[in-house]
Each structure stands twice: as C-alpha cells, then as structure tokens.
Length: 193
Image 1 (cartoon, rainbow, N blue to C red):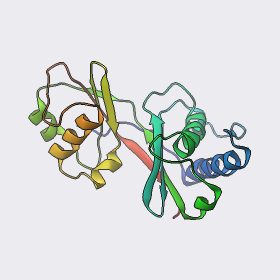
Image 2 (image 1 turned 90 degrees about the vertical axis):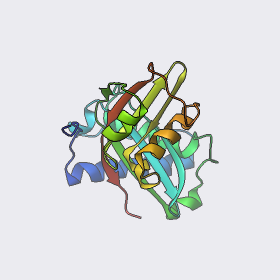
Image 3 (image 1 turned 135 degrees about the vertical axis):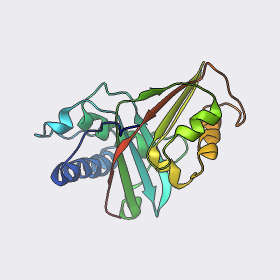
Image 4 (image 1 turned 30 degrees about the vertical axis):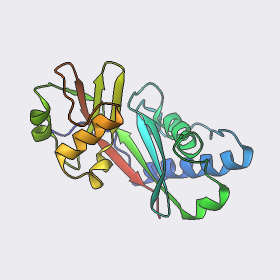
C-alpha cells in the first residue's frame, strides 16, 4: 500500500509549531486557562488537520490527547490539544511550571484515515506496517486509536491490535465482522529534549 498523504512542513514551519506548544504551555500554566497565540502567518498551519500532542516528563508519558478529525486549522488543534494534554488528560495531574524544564513533546500530524476491509484479525495483523501505520478500531460504542509511535512499546502486530482492543474496552481475544478499521500515518515533530 502506498504511503498515506500527510501535511508536509518545512523545518521553519515545524519550529513554529513547536514554539506554539511552548507558548501555550507556559502561558496557560501562568493564567490557569487556555491561552491561544495569534493565528500564525503560515498557510500550511492554517490547513485543516487532526493531530495529537504527546507530553513526556523525564521521558515518561505525561499526557496525550488529540483528534483524528480534521475540522479545525492545524495550528488551533496543536494549541488546543497541547493544553488538553497538559491539563485535561484524566490519567495525570495537571502539568506544573517546575516540570517544564524536564518536559519534551511530540506533535503527531495525522493523514486522513483510510478504511481497511475487515477480513478478520489475522488479515489485519498481516496487513499492518509496523512503525508506520496508526490504527483506529470502532465497534458499537467502543473505539480507540493508537498512533504509529505506539509501535515503539508494542512492536508485534498481534500485540498492537490486542492492546488497542483493550483500550477500546474489548477483550484482547474478541473479534467481530462488524468491527470497523481505519489506518493513518503521521508526520512526527519532536521538541528538543
């Protein structure tokens, strides 16, 4: 399968995105609310695109929130989900100013999702491109998403799929022909550690 199309950013545009995340984090800690920067004078960041922001403190996960839906301009999603990852991820306490010195992050800009025919779990496992594909699973009220970066922790495709099902609230060994599957890829931007 050919690579899915992601937005491409120059080095300068990537740095602008990184700078926006730092601004949102610093100012939002100070003001105890989301502080949005002015709209950047950058056409590519004004395109609609989904993204996830993953925060790390001392290289340990500290927050990860985003959207696969491209309904808002990328720069707005980067800022909103930077804030949400720092202050709204229910798994963690809100980020504190003192943690910023040890904080690093990744901005994952998502391609559009591409439907995968559900031909069974084994077919899915054999079709996935480890380290490249992100995956969305939907079944009735259950849904979950793994970014391609999750392959670093779960490098075996069968484990990747099993753990995604658990994240969706399904049993590891559950499968149903009505499960909907979507793949996507990301442009990954990393802050300096």
